[in-house]
Image 1 (tube, protein in one colour):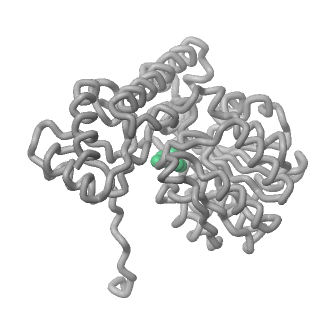
Image 2 (cartoon, helix red, strand yellow; image 1 turned 90 degrees about the vertical axis):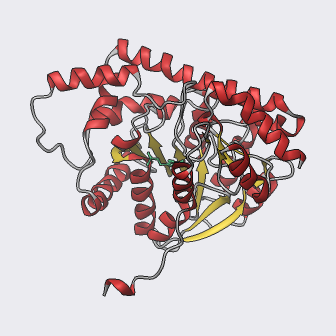
Image 3 (cartoon, rainbow, N blue to C red; image 1 turned 120 degrees about the vertical axis):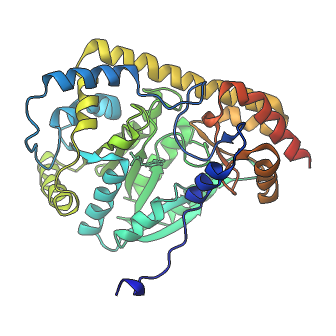
Amino acid sequence: GLADLPPLVSDSLLALIAMVNADPRTDKIDVGVGVYRDGAGRTPVMRAVKESERRLHEAQDSKSYLGGAGDRRFAELLRPIVLGAHAGDDRIVGLQTPGGCGALFLALKLIAAFNPQARVFMGTPTWPNHPPMARGARLEIVEYRHYDPVARAVDFGAMIEALESARPGDVALLHACCHNPTGADLSEDQWREVARVVAERRLIPLIDFAYQGFGRGLEQDRFGVEVLLEACNEVLITQSCDKNFAVYRDRVGCLFVKAPSADIAKFAMTHLLQISREAWSMPPDHGAAAVRTVLDNADLAADWRVELDAMHGRIRMVRERIAAADPRLAYIADQQGMFSMLPLSVEQVKRLRSEHSIYMADSGRANLVGIADGDLDRFCEAVVGALDT
Ligand code: PMP
């Protein structure tokens, strides 16, 4: 019966949320949850999305089924943004998915369907949902060290060594930008080197692209995607609009698959539709329709860029401020996206909670943009104080 289910290890981030909620102090700083926050500490609906939802509400005259690929125009409009120079390549097919998670689910199941022996190479630490998703697709995982905690940068030697040990058909799971949880991204030269090894070893790159626009900028953040598309015949890209359109709970994502030919790509699409049919039949419409409406209207698309660039600007500002607080935090300015691993012990992390009501994961992983403008100085002082004890 149900009582025979094995116990699960509880998600430590959920436990952290409970801890924040239980703290009655009013000056709490929550750098645990992974959502963008503005200077006032809010995660607002973006202006262009709000307006597109208004237009949708007025214009939508049916909610009849759309089909397994979801909103086709949505996937089409994303192509130039996500694929850049490769947008017109007819060997690349794309379909709407329930968020980046839905895209990862499809991608991993597709790989397992054509090569159950494929192993998924993942750098550690990685997003905590990556390993269970790969295991869920019954794929073996091979871990290597992505992040060198002493150098506070990518352990590129370990990465290349691991990829060079992979067998043809193995999967290289890569974060396109804004590495979660470390913020440590590859340089352009390192991307070229990864593409060279992945192509030479005939590995399949699976690129998780959840934070486009939060790193160096919308165009710059797809550098790795473009280099790998240039180098390889088979590439999978799992995209999410949940962060860069701030539509988290509406679950908006897209999977792009590049095959050796347009015919094989079309054939792979029939399998993707079958897998999604078994899982969710059709993706939820609203969020993708809202994103489509933004991208399909020049005024809304331009305003989205303005607001996205402002979010990116705040991420940079917060990083610079923290980096300037102490030489031991200087590396934070060289990293990308919302996350960083702060050089704190578990004891120091716990003391920040009890003495300063600052909440981050035990590992020291912090969503830096979770800090409101008015709390930045206090955060820096508390962290530097903790480093000294
Ligand atoms: N990949 C990474 C690295 C993420 O951090 C996240 C979300 N936290 C996702 C994928 C999934 O995003 P979504 O909410 O769109 O499913």
